[in-house]
Structure formats: C-alpha cells, structure tokens
Length: 418
Ligand SMILES: C=C(NCc1c(COP(=O)(O)O)cnc(C)c1O)C(=O)O
Image (cartoon, rainbow, N blue to C red; front, side, top):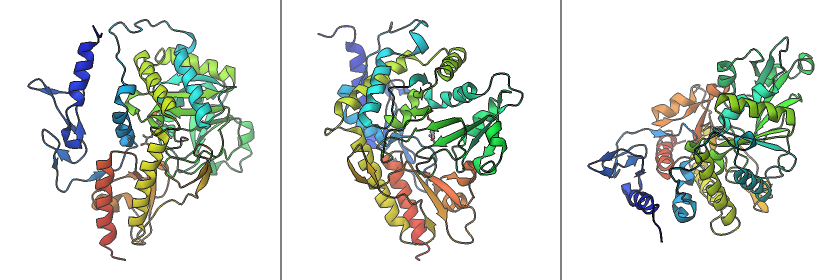
C-alpha cells in the first residue's frame, strides 16, 4: 500500500474537492484562510465560493489563456496526476541538450500520431514556452560577426512578441525590420540575411500561411497547428518549426515548448543559447508534460481524445458567435474555408483560437474601443500592426469567460437592431 506518497495524495484530493461553485478553483499552492484553500474565481465571479456574478463586469477576451481544456483534465484526473518526490532529479547535470529522453520520445510519437509534423529528420530542443525559443532561434539563425545584423520580419497581422523580443534582445547580430510587404519586391532580400517569422495557423486570424519572402531562414510558429484549432491537411515539414505545450494540452503555466530543427549547426546554437540562458527547462515541468502527453496518446482515437474534445468545444463556440454576429452588419469575422483534416479523416469547419473582428460601420474606426464600451476587453488590431478597425477576441478561455462574452456581444449587436 501507499506509504510516503499518501499525504501528498490526500492534500491534492482535498483541494480538488473544493468546488468553488464551478466558477473558480482552489490550488494546493493557493492562499488559505483558516486552514482552508481559498477559491480563485473566474473573471466577474466573487465570494468565498465564487458563486456571486459581479454586475457590470467586463468580459475579458484579451489573452489566449487556453483554459477551455481545463474540464478535459478534470475528467482525466486519475491518469494525468503526478506525485513529485522531494528528491526528484535535483542535479543540474542531464543528458545532451537538457532534455528528457522519454519526453523527446513521446513528443516525436505525438507528432507521428497526429500527423502535424515530420519529426524523423529533425533535432528537438525544449524551451520554457516556445516564447524562449523564439529569440533562441533568431540568435541561432543570425550570422556570426556579420557586417550588418540580420533583418527580422513578419507578415502583418503578426504575433507582437516577435517584434517585442527582437527589439528587447537587440543583439548586434539581428534587428527588427518590420513587415514583409515592405520587402516583397526588394532586391536587398536576396543578399542580406533575412529571418522571416511565419505563424501557421496565424495569430490573430487563424489562417494557414507559408513564407512570402522565400528567404533562407524562416521560423514556422506552429503553436496552433493542432486539431483543436485547425484542419491538418498535411504534416508540416519545414527546417525550423515551433510548438507550444500551452496550445497542445492547455498548460500555459507549465512554460513548455519545443522546436524541431533540421540543420545541426542551428540546433547546436540553440542548445548553446539554452545552456547560457537558463541551463535548460525545469525537469519538474518535463516530468509533468511527459505524463500529460502519455494521456493524450493513450486516449487518442477513443472517447477521451483531447483533440475531439477541443475541436467540439471550439466548433460549438464558433457556431454561437457566428450566429450572433450574423444578426447585424456592424461586425464581421475572418472567413476560413472548411478543409479536409487528415487527423479526423473528414472535412471540418474552422475553429481557430481567436476571432479577428472587423468593425464595418464607417464611424467605428476604433473597434477595440467600440467593444470596450460594450463591456468587452479585446486585443486591439494595431498591436498586430493591423488597422484599428480590427480587434481580437480570445475564444479559448473558460466557459464562464465565453458565456460573458456572448452576453455582451448579444447586447451590442441588438442595440443596433439592424
Ligand atoms: C497566448 C497568446 N499567444 C501565445 C503564443 C505563443 C506562446 O507560446 P508559449 O509556448 O506559451 O510560450 C507562441 N506563438 C504564438 C503564435 C502564440 O500565439 C496570445 O496571443 O494571447
């Protein structure tokens, strides 16, 4: 029978038993009041048990916080829990590239099973979120002691972090050089070192993209190239591909991502970056992610398939949002064609993580402001270097967040009654 793990198990189950009225949750490392863990409530909910809905509280559709997958893990609690002993892997020392051999093996098996990437001829590196690998790759793809720094670019609308990191870490080997449309016909592109970011499916609009500049160094960010969010027409097979645990299993706070890299020299430079930057990724995190991926693989194709769960949840949310937006011509959403998905072996509707909303009325030039006045917090289009007529809504937060968003959308669409 259980011995030293019993207390950890009892502690975890006691916290899990705190319901928080279904509008929040308690955590083992949460604040406790009089010896009891305190409920941490979803946006707009309050009270000791999160049962109170605040009036006039704005729906927060700003961040891509992937909590839509939390109910999946609560349903698979017994298989997805891990007890971490007090002495689990205390050493700095580890195998090549600071990565768990078992976790690498399972990630490669996941890509083969989902069919979303060719991993066989690629090296793999882990990062604290794929966020950490974004600059690691810009560094690795930049020329050593070149006379001019590499020019880093992306196609608008693009994920703002690419620009923010490149400018923040502005080493002399690289600098941010704006959007690809500025360079599309420039003769400079063929000679100068360009590094192009391609996000596919894209954040914010969910469209599948390919490189537009045709340069040597392209970083394909496939954070959303999973069946939750997109059809998988074929396995991606690029020289540099990024994936994120945040969007694969929904565990954004575990800060785990990985890169598949074809060229060994680029791989070596990224490993060197990881060594100098943080000496690898937490082994506690790697242990947990290994357990999560084992569940995903074990449930695949059956009733507990996470991609079925995720796609069904997001397809349902899109159906409701499309219905409400169709009641008026004030707003429009990005149009993505249904596409054949090799994972589900069928044609499937789009279910991207974000709604890319356009305000169509002449006077509504600041779409984020229009929605804010309607009690909806969105991520303004100018952050993605798009027009202020656009703004982004996250559809991957909690069910409470989505319900609140819908209520506010019904109100703002109905007020025009058109
Ligand atoms: C959470 C959000 N973005 C996460 C993200 C990330 C971050 O992934 P991490 O593995 O969580 O660090 C990387 N790439 C793209 C294209 C992303 O959209 C957001 O845009 O709200």
